Length: 71
Image (cartoon, rainbow, N blue to C red; front, side):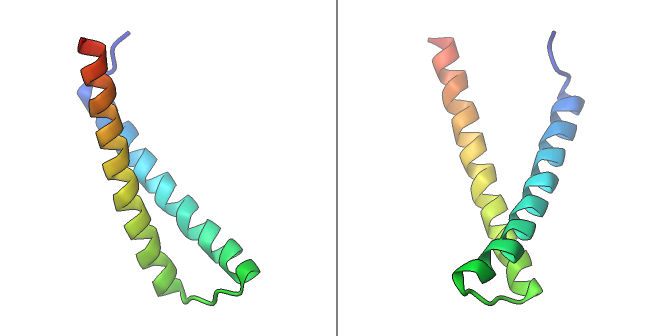
């Protein structure tokens, strides 16, 4: 069964939102263990950077696998 474009978009947005939340919560919990003190604003900004990097990585891998599929 093929996924519709609309559902692909819903999945992608959900993935980004959940990933961002996981990144921020993980930073808040883990950074103090390593002696790193950050504000909530700093955690939110770092989460955004990690999310953008993750999006780029996911897109590049998806395109690479699509290219391999066509070979």
